[in-house]
Image (cartoon, rainbow, N blue to C red; front, top):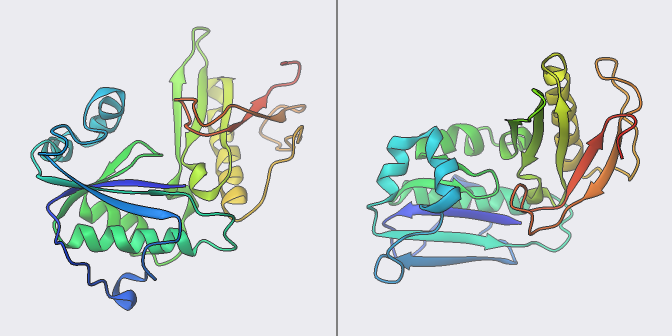
Length: 233
């Protein structure tokens, strides 16, 4: 699933250089919709819980979104692709729009906001897929003093996100390493089997993976793999 929102003021005619922007155009299954202030005074993801989360990281850029006259929604699903060209094509299009009137782009699946420079540095200029940049690893405190680690963004690759509760301070770094391995594995086409055991010297033995959740779960907007400690049910 691709889901980006660009904010700014955009030309009506698209003349995108396939070579310059490394794009074959709009991927099949993805649509582009333009909104103006007259159509929708408050643009998507500039208010409510999404805005609170996305606005924290870059408040100055977020403030600009509140006054731009237009936004573009790039959204859709690609049916069982054999490669990541759909992601490359979408990134190229978003980069063109940022070069032609865009002031910022919201990666809705990560709940992250990027200005033109950061977008180019992170996604366009490398020229190769960097799955770890497309997925965010989040954590929040739990009542027992541990932390819950989970991801957002793996739906871009048609794969479930990740979740692990009750992570102690000592195990935070190994947990991030585990997540990064699973993110890369899945983005490259791999799958995590139900009941898969975790084998890492830096993590306790007996951890297992279990599929859970659905697209309506606000924490992920995706299914996810719940990683359990030994003895958890």
